[in-house]
Image (cartoon, rainbow over all chains, first blue to last red; front, side):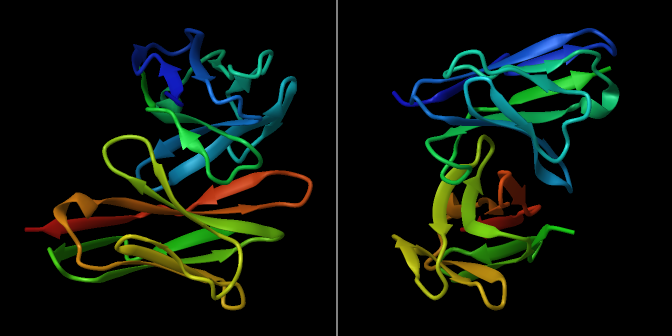
Length: 112
Length: 112
């Protein structure tokens, strides 16, 4: 089954404790992206990747890192999480460009 | 400033009604406009629009783009309770970069 998977689905952590949210897709897609969704602000792009070893910033990259060492994986790293990074995070992938993306199920992160 | 604005913010209708959701945008280097449906989970793709005046249709849903006036509408006819969701409009734009900006969504509630 074609899908985008994210882990963990729910995470509660404390300020400053490094964490990684994994994202994996099995559709051989070139593009992968990370978004955060907050009430009243909608979905905002954090980072995207056009292919292995090629990444670029979205609209809200501060406090996040990404890497694309394999085509199928695109982890999101929070080196020192802060409470303002409490949000719902979505990973997405697509064949070419950022249209017709397939979204993962989301990761709800709470930073205390 | 690049932006996507959706209206109304929320809407309550009865089963069988027809609804029209609006999306206006201001971006540079427009590529495509996308509609997504989001229930209590990840957004799912509905339509991609790139050309003005060409209606996209899927069952009871249809959408059209006006690139001159910079807006799109999403129509849902004979609404059902299963249509209850947040409908997201997004615009893919950018020259050398890949940007995707979402509106904050329209919350549609269909009552029996």
